[in-house]
Amino acid sequence: MANKSVNPWFWVPTLYFAEGVPYFLVNNISVMMFAKMGVPNDQLAFFTTLLYFPWFLKGIWSPIVDVVKTKRWWVISMQVVMTALCILLTVSLPHPDAALIATKGTSVSLFWLTLVLFIIAAFASATHDIAADGFYMLGHDQSSQARFIGIRSTFYRIASVFGQGVLVYIAGEVESRTNDIPWSWQVTLGVTAAVMFLITIYHIFAMPRAKADTPRIDASADSRQMWRELGNSFVTFFTKKGAWLAILFMLLYRLPEGFLIKLCQPFLVDAREITFNEAGQIIGGGLGLDTRMVGLLYGTIGVIFLLLGGIVGGIYISKRGLKHSLWIMAAAMTLPCLSFVYLSTWLPSNPWAIGTAIVIEQFGYGFGFTAYMMYMMYFSEGEFKTSHYAICTAFMALSMMLPGFVAGKIEMAIGYEWFFWMVIACSVATLLVTWLAYKKIDPEYGKK
Image (tube, rainbow, N blue to C red):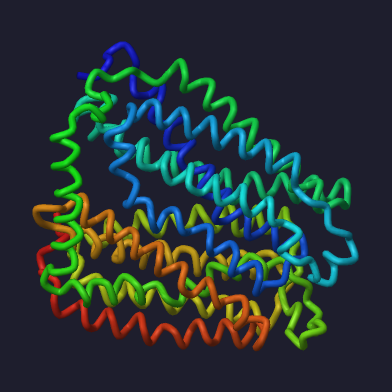
């Protein structure tokens, strides 16, 4: 039974805000930071894609969180670790020369310590996700959990706006005042460290000590049973009817966005003039926006419309069902990518034109991604629903990693305009797996 003395309003919102901030720091802000530091797109895309690995692998060590210590202990411990890592990132961030930054000649090797710290932060963040979701189910009763499901989602989304919008805008504001790009990101990382520190201190006192939140390390029989069940969940996932079609769908449905999402922010800030580096690779051809504008247009307004698209998508599926929504949602995932073809071809300077293109793309992605999430839930139905859904999320992470590894090299070989046309060509893969999956889905699934 949960500790009744702590109202969920005092810890659920901050818990899921704390879950979101490190994720967006590692996977989104890092891309923007390295782009502004002058790291070439091929190195930037490859090494930041590696940071997805902990979310791909977290199902492997999730049983450890379940049996060792309490979920509360894991949550607070990981917040302490992430706070410390943010402080280390702040004080150790390299300062490449301004001339090197201007020519996009900064080698990622200069940031080896930064990358190591980001990787550790990624593992800590993924572990925090496991513990936070587990604690949510133990810290209050089922009726309270149902009431707060929307609250936890909302504050995770607020963390998205804070991470991709507010923090990036802060970096841009400091850069405009000091004309010192490395210092601007040190300030931003310092602000992140301060926020995580305050949340950690708050949670030490505010998070309840749930009676159901007990370690199971001494329950050896239960632990052995848990490992057997884990093995069974993996075996039954891959032997489930339609498993390989489901895996193909999970890997290819988001293929266009997998390429696009890794380089859209570098495109927004890269110089408009096209030049070539010593290796003959294309540099430039972007919109040349300042960091503040990216934080406002992409990180704030764009994210709001991304979330709005997800809300509308959920409503749409509840009315028509997954099967009858799938084609229009697949189109919404792919056609709005033409926005970046327009931006890279015409290179508009009007913020309204740029903002409108970003809004269209982000809303379409949010709307279309809803079908992807519902499909994972649909395929996970059955005896091992929770475990199978966790495996699905691993394939979801892999679907972003595989394009990310090569996106930068492709862009530097053909330039942004042709790169975004290639993204549109990848829509064929999305439509193909949509056609294959469509035939197997229950027409009533997802309807109210």
